[in-house]
Amino acid sequence: MKTLKNNLGLGIFLLFIGLFTSCKEDSATSLDLGSDVNILSFKVGNTAGVVDNEKGTISVLVPAGTDLSAVKPSIAIPENATVSPASGSAQNFTFSSTTPLVYRVYNGNVFNTYQVTVKEIIAEITAFRIGNKVGIINQENKSITIYLPVGTDVKELNPSVEFTNGASIAPGQGGYVDFSSAVKYTLTYMGQTFPYTVTVVLGDEPA
Image (cartoon, rainbow, N blue to C red; front, side):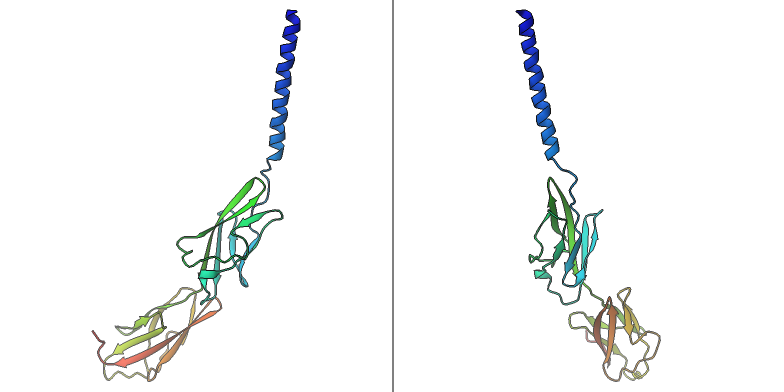
């Protein structure tokens, strides 16, 4: 009788272990951690962003004048995956250079997070000098005014210009320029142009 009881107890114990192991294996089988959660491409209009899957970052440089408050990115993701915010949904990227927007890709039991920035392509003249005189730059209306002493020959002036690294400028530096009337300087950067109007005024600079 004692042996029968022992065998019955052992049988129940083994049955319990078997059920526990089976459930554990089923759970492990349903947990898929190998799904692809990388963004394949991220575009704003015709501009493709730079996707860094290692760092989890995406950066997009869009043409100057793009409305960053209502950007609708086109996002390509793996099959069966989803992305939030969704592809094509309008997002405000106005301050994304300082506070990137977060995108997440979900696929099965795993997800991946991306920090996304969208910025305009901008090139600027940052300093304009003739001799020891410094021009007054208005970045909003792209104008520069520089005051020179009365009697200066404005037809042969040699300005020194500082501007965004990587941009080109016309007229080029090192040559003489006729400032008897306003002169247009144009920066070219990443396929975009940024014109400035430079005016020389003879007389003292207003206080």
